[in-house]
Image (cartoon, rainbow, N blue to C red; front, top):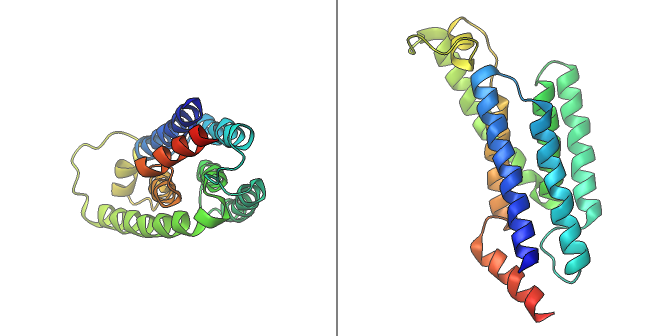
Length: 187
């Protein structure tokens, strides 16, 4: 049961700081580094708990799968950052959520992220043209968009992709967590 508590706590921490990053990106178009660092740091005790307390359980992929996803996404997102297509906070947040997703969960993460990014891009264009919000919060995405900026709070799209990826991987499904608890009690 301790194992399930640790895993659940780490998942909540990761998603909590992912939500904070999305909110910060919405309000200020900035994702503080500490949010991405804490999302990544939460993976370590979760993965190590499974590895050492229940090595026979296949809740996560192999460490290689998670490391490959992290490195691949870091290289891709750093390249996008280098060409000023995404922000540095977006690149870091996407990389650490790729660590959680592993190779198997990377496509669901990227698909939902791309769909949400497209929606946010469309909303940005609408805000550019029609300026529907009166007195938006200063320096927020909405305020900047209504003055013609094309910035998109991609942290929201990354977080949406991460939530979907976590669901697909079984991290958020009670049945999977109960099965994990039963497997560890049986061993």
